[in-house]
Image (cartoon, rainbow, N blue to C red; front, side, top):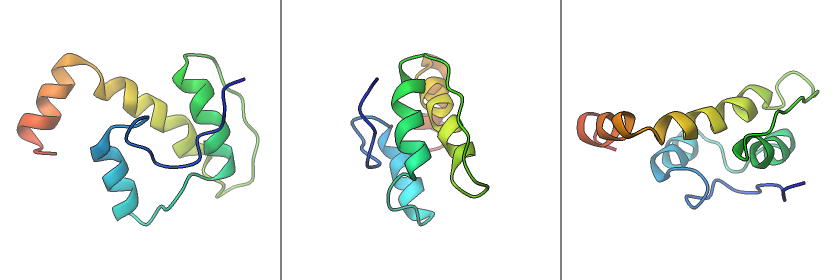
Length: 84
């Protein structure tokens, strides 16, 4: 089992995503995000049960954002047109 991710680290997530999370007021991942992200980022399936408001949605979406942002055409769009 991968180690939990305990911060919005640009070594793990693109810097522009970390910047937006911090700007939105997120200071650190929730417990469910901490354990979901490293598993999902390896490509494994994740099933998680947690209370409403615990961060499950972002727990599943962040690895998706990382995967999408890593596609060559998307990188051009993000950096050239959105100016991150």
